Image (tube, rainbow, N blue to C red):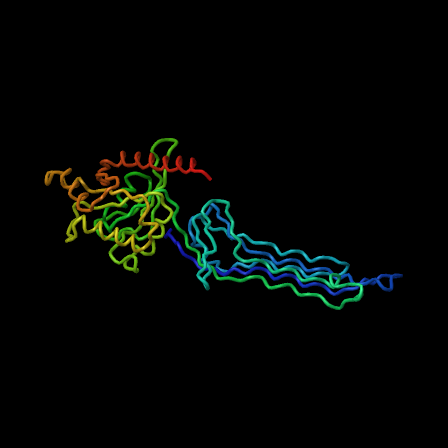
Length: 346
């Protein structure tokens, strides 16, 4: 199934029920007085994060969601029934925006989280509410208020521990195939990855993490060029970025350093938060260096020219060289992050 990460839906809360104008009329009670009941509140609309869906594709076919209207009040001081709330299921990782105002209403990141998006109308008051010592038989009641209505923009951000970042054909899909059961498309031409891919990396029976592969980022992606702009936001919730660089690109005038610098520039333009995330440099396709140059000296020259101060790994995703060590180190890093967060003072 194609990954759908954006959807537009209309949500309408129910109107409040109207109050009732009524009077008690019973035999032998000639002046029973007012007995009109209140209306019921209108139903509200909530978004609920559930784990039984993982895309927004269903909203293409069901884009309007209406809650129930509150029942009108009745005589004998009977209150109208409240309208039923409705819960619209969305996948975890969904961000919710008001389409008209562009206001961010919230994020649903964990299964079971819910978000009130439109409030049901308040019930109207029956004429019983208006009686007083000087108004024994009020002929007035109030109408229920209108329920809120909104057009929502839903954006699904992949929730992954590690994000793969790099130019087209840097080897991101090859790496995720090598270390997980995910099978993204791999070919010897750019932009073979058109939609995000998720893979679960199991380092042993009890320890695993989720890795995300997004379409390659090109120069100008932060302004909308290529496919990277649409998916850069999927890296926002990752805890670690792996910047893959092809050490020996085919048929390209760009050096590995130039390619890496373009990516760094794009993520800095896109978001300061993304640029400041922990980022490891992964020099991929080192199998091409065998028999040509001294591998260590060649890779060190790239690191020096980039003035890279973070962790550096040399791997061949195609031949699974160095990938096992890399995955274990990532697992240790993520576990250390969890431990530090648990020890932080509240």
